Amino acid sequence: MRVEFIENGRRIISTNRGVFKDNELIWYDNAYVLSLKFDEEKVEIVIKKIPKAGGEVR
Image (tube, rainbow, N blue to C red):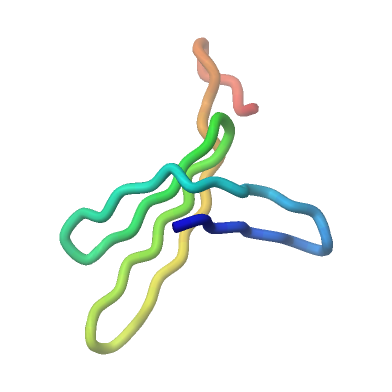
């Protein structure tokens, strides 16, 4: 499944690389990880930048 996250008209992540683990869907590309966690009461969406070697953020 392909996922795209667009913020203010700018595409942040667009990928079909993902995994399903327990109650969480995780998609990733070379710069970001997008996580979708869900249960009976709520859905949580988190997007994080992947740090480069040495600790700086891409």
